Image (cartoon, rainbow, N blue to C red; front, side, top):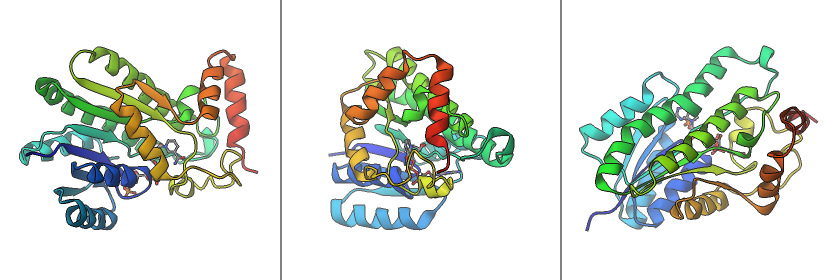
Length: 260
Ligand SMILES: NC(=O)c1ccc[n+]([C@@H]2O[C@H](COP(=O)([O-])OP(=O)(O)OC[C@H]3O[C@@H](n4cnc5c(N)ncnc54)[C@H](OP(=O)(O)O)[C@@H]3O)[C@@H](O)[C@H]2O)c1
């Protein structure tokens, strides 16, 4: 019996690591992609020994132009056909736009948007041909409003949300579903990477674990939903934001992004 195959980007830590663990537990072979090889190799050994699944580790910088195509080429060379694609790699920086690091900003756009889009473009036709597939794109609660001090990140997640919903509708009836996940803040290395632990949004708050969010996110994806917002509180906020003037919504985000 052949096992389903799932590719997870950003599988070296945080949410991607937990998605990979969960999918291994549920009998998926895995392709793991991120820059840092060691945690993915460890995960691969654990998954192979514990769950008898096959794991391919592809260390890769997804901020390079064309990285999504390169990953797809590697899959084609190995004759690997994906049943599940988790476009999870992503990051932010917290800084006023005029003071933000330009290189980091451009890398962010490539990882959060360009690579995600290119990899999806290369994977969808095969899924459609085979009549089944699940694509999960990590958006964020940030997708629902403009976010001063993280303007590019928030806008990148709005792209991921709208891109995913459009594709979900386009692919209706094909057997392929695309789901954007919108968690609020999650306890991962994300905040430290962005040096934003002192932002009002996260400081002193108890955040859900990456394992909890991966479990929730996969359950939502299995329902084939176009998008899902985590927790009643964030659902209420995402819903309410639709009725506020956009500038008011941006001012609320500016306050939550303040360093305190
Ligand atoms: N944590 C939150 O509060 C939160 C909330 C909402 C949405 N999200 C979204 O969830 C996703 C996962 O975030 P996380 O919280 O798990 O963050 P994380 O713990 O910082 O993990 C990010 C992952 O992305 C990978 N990555 C970053 N830059 C990369 C690059 N240039 N090339 C390849 N891989 C790269 C990292 O691997 P390497 O460094 O090894 O390359 C790592 O595996 C992101 O899209 C994020 O925007 C997070």
